[in-house]
Amino acid sequence: MTPLPASTLSRLECSNCGRVHEALKLQGLCGHCDRPLLARYDLGKAGATLKLHEMAGRRSDMWRYGEVLPVAGEPVSLGEGFTPLLRAPRLGANLGVDDLRVKDESLNPTGSFKARGLSAAISMARERGVAKVVLPTAGNAGVATAAYAAAANLEAEIFCPADTPVAFVQAMKLLGARVHLVDGLIDRCGAAAREAAAAGDAFDLSTLKEPYRLEGKKTMGYELVEQMGGCLPDVIFYPTGGGTGLIGMWKAFQEMEEMGWIGSARPRMVSVQAAGCAPMVRAFAAGATRAVPWENASTLAAGLRVPGAVGDMLILSCLRDSGGTAVAVTDEEMLAGVRLLGRLAGVLAAPEGGATVAAARRLREEGYLAAGDTVVLFNTGTALSYMDVLAGVPH
Ligand SMILES: *Cc1c(COP(=O)(O)O)cnc(C)c1O
Image (cartoon, rainbow, N blue to C red):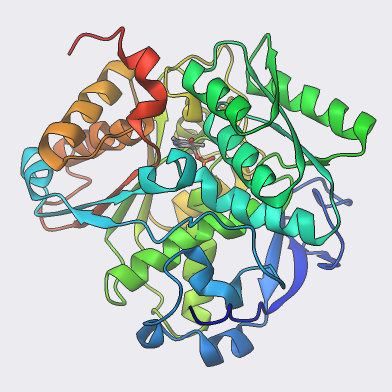
């Protein structure tokens, strides 16, 4: 394996007020306005070695894009990223889309794309001298945190809702994390994690409250371009909770344009949420720049049960700037989507992945999608983690 290319990380910049923060220090939200920080790179330098048509021979995980990732030393890696972009012609025919592809993130370590973000964030936490991390989670982020903390020899304390699917809780424990079941939703878990961080000198890995999970997830954008030979799809369907992947890919497209990988054209970005928790859909429809937290959030798609996202402004501006939209689908529609991904594409999808099928069908019927559009659906996790939930559902 060739050596890891050197990071060109230069600074952290507030996504809201633009203030610059020191990248050599571990940072949370912007100290001035409490909004997420974004990592910035010397893209001139990065682009001198990171070239779209000279990627062969690089390691086959997300660290192949090392110039535009934050880690200076050896990353904490379990082989995350570089997942397949599958052609799904039978599913496409079913939906009335000629060129339909599925980015299958269920093949990541720990069964979801959360591996990407936590590989990056835990690598940075270790590099900056952190000994213990805390995290609120709906399931997948907790399993990934437990795995990467174990690989990095860090202590992990995780807070998840008491009704989190058992496979997630068992996996976190097997991976050596301390797990707390909290009475309430992810926002309650977030508060508990903050208290634990303050009390125990631990670093809070909540999504977008530190800048590096986003960097891991943005690699999905680089992979799409590489796997499509320098092209981008017309439309991307992304099941949106905290929106980290959506914001990350949008950031990746900008970086790639600055390095000359792509032009100024962008895919239309479609956020897919659950009917029982759709704060972004509501805010997008209202033309708002911020999203009001959703009351009594309820859906079996654990990853979509996020009543309020820290990155709401970034999600909404990405949807608008791309000519995208936001769609809510019911749990029944998601499960029908899971069955179609299984039967027509051979993909064992999480309900969140199934949601994208339902959304694509709706938008095709409404004429937002044309038969000739190139469409990418994100299957963000594996069905295996939800078997206790899925077992109760008639097939
Ligand atoms: C976390 C999660 C999501 C939502 O991801 P965000 O980038 O935070 O919006 C979607 N699907 C699954 C399976 C998840 O675990």
